Image 1 (cartoon, rainbow, N blue to C red):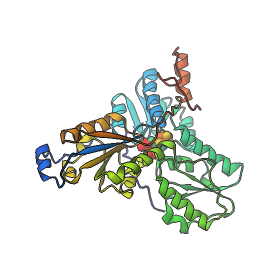
Image 2 (cartoon, rainbow, N blue to C red):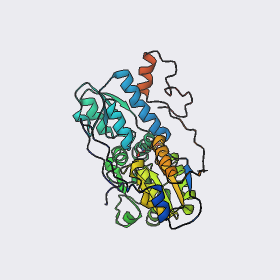
Image 3 (spheres, rainbow, N blue to C red):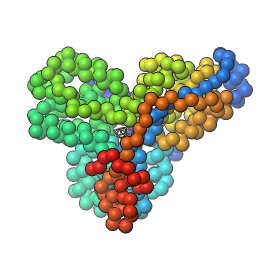
Image 4 (tube, protein in one colour):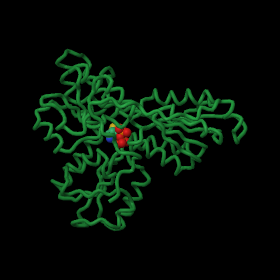
Length: 373
Ligand code: 2E5
Ligand code: F3S
């Protein structure tokens, strides 16, 4: 089976500080770029909404910040808490040590599981080392874990898990029913799949896939296995589908789409692909504004901008400021949905905050809760 589609594997990051990669821009002035333009008339930006932080990312990042406040540095985090360079570097500077596996953490220390979720085997390893743990798995990933357990133990199904082999979320979900799960990377793999019983199959998925491609995979699976069961509710989460829906509206009008997000962020990489599929003449992904190349502007009267679910809004604002320097100061927000979902903090953090006498232990300042564990 083929491997993960994010552009690059997660960097192995341990007790060292990794500098942010600086990709030099072409450094042409706004006047030079204007002179080289292939179009006439005003420049504009279409800013997709929703974009940026989802509820699961917000919760995971706050959980680590609260852990640092309550416990003090160092706090260990297994893998990147979310797949965003800026978030990881910032937390590292505050005293977080990112590790690849629980066996790298000294006995008795505090370890946070990332938003992408972990398998029971990983939790066992942490427990064997007597680690104190905080589980920052997004509740919508936990929902998929529960489905995996329920459908394989109680209902005796075999799972076709649509997702990218090697991605942490897929490893975590797979690890909940490893003997009864087959990973399907995409529609191109459907013909080769072997299953124990074609009448006892259910499909589940990674939360951050392309909505369209996943439906294509499911349709092909159903052609081969007509009795394939659907999951009780969508596994592709609200944030993934909302961000894709917004960029689908922007893309046909855009000469260039800039997606802010990291190379290992599945949902961010999907946004670039969706932009191209829906008619953007060009799409580029950047971590930071300094990676935007002014040469992209010469044919770009209309620029679409969006960001992945793990991307702080400050990084988008940096890009908008840069675009304004080049005459793209007419910014229209294209809103396709309103989001008000907020998850309560992990139970270990709520307990620590309650013991420390904090009044509002649910949301670290924000009171609304839509889900709890
Ligand atoms: C947990 C899904 O898009 P990715 O899965 O690679 O992760 P991300 O960290 O960029 O986005 C947040 C997230 C977290 C998405 N599960
Ligand atoms: Fe959760 Fe979806 Fe965000 S799975 S972490 S709400 S992208």
